[in-house]
Image 1 (cartoon, rainbow, N blue to C red):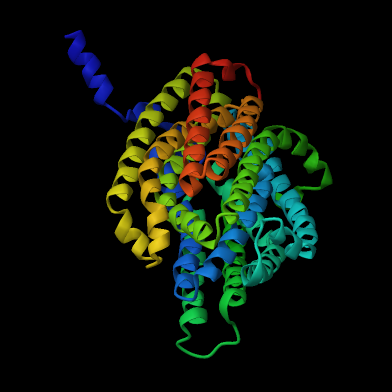
Image 2 (cartoon, one colour):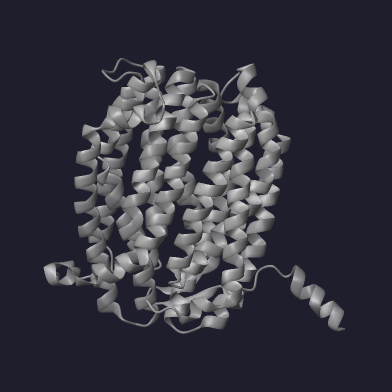
Length: 462
C-alpha cells in the first residue's frame, strides 16, 4: 500500500494545492502566471528570431553584426532590470503581507529610477558604440554594421527599460496578461516592418541593418505608449499622483534585492559577450553558427526560464505571508516539471536539428559546426532547468547574495575559462565552448539546488 502511494506521489507532477495564492485581483495559480510569462518571453524573443531569419536572406555578415550587437544590448537590458526585478520581488512580498501602500511606492520608484538610469546609460554608450563593437573582436563590414545598429538601438533603450518596469508591476499584481498583449503587438509590428525593409514590397527610405535598427525602435516605442495607457487605465490603486521624491526612499530596499541578482545576470551576459569575442577568433562562421543555434535553443530555454520566473513570483507571495513549507514543496515540484520539459524539448531539437538549421542557412560549414552541439545542448538544457528553478526560487525568497556569488564564480571559471581552454587551446572550437556552457549550467544549478534544500533562505527578510 505504501509502495503504491509513493509511486502515485512520484508520478503526480502537479499539485494544484501548492500552486495557488489569493491576491486582491483574485486567485493566482502557477499555470495562470507561467503561461503569460512563457508567451511574453516567446514573443519578445521572436523579435530577435524574425530579425535573424529575415537578415539571413540579406547576408550572413548582417546576421553576425546584428547578433553581436544584440548580445551587448541584452547585457545592457539585463542591467536595467536590476531595479524592475528588485521592485517585483519587493512588491510581491509586500502584497503577500497585505502592505498595499509600500507596494505602490515600490512601483512608482521602479518606473522613475528605471527611466533615469536608462537615459544616462543609453546616452553614454551611444557615444562609444564603435569602440564597444571593436572590443568584441569584430572587423570590416561586420564591425561597421554592428556599430550603427548598436548606436541607434542603445540611444532609445529607455523604451525597453520602461516596458520592463511596467510589465514587472503588472506581473507582481497578478495581471501578467497585459504584458503579453503588449508584447504581441510589439512583435507583430516589428515583423511587418522588418519584412518591408528587407523584402521591399514597396519603396522605403530604410535599408539593411540600419533599417532593422529603426524598425526595432519604432515597435518598442509603440509598445511603450500602449503599456503606459494600460497602466493609467488599470484598477491597481497605485495612486501615482500622490507620490513625491520622498516615495523614492524605498530604492535602497529595492536595490538590496535587485542588485545582487542584476550583478549575477550582468556577469553572465558579459561572459556571453566575451565568449562571442573568443569565437570571433574562429571566424564569422562560428559566430553565425552560435547565433543560429542560440535562436533555436531559446525555445527550450524559455520553458524553464518562464517556469522559474513564475515560481519566483509565487514564492515571493508565499514567503511574504510566512508559508515557507508550501514554498519549499512548490520548488521541488516545479524542478521536476522543468527538467522533464527541457530534456524533451532539447531531444526533439537534436532529432530535427538539420531541418531547423536549414531555415536559416544552407552553408555546409555552419551545418558541420552545429551538428555535435545539437547533442551536447541536451545536457546544457537539463542544467538550465535546475538553474532557472533554483536560482529564481532563491531570489523570490530574498536569498540573493549566495546566488550572486555562485553565478559570478561559475560563469567566469566554467564558462569563459574553459571556453578558452577547450575551444581555443585544445582546438575543439565551438564544440569546446558548448561543453564549457554545459559545465557552467550544471554547476550553478546543482549548487543552487543544495542551497534550497538547506532552507537557509527562510532566514532572509525582505
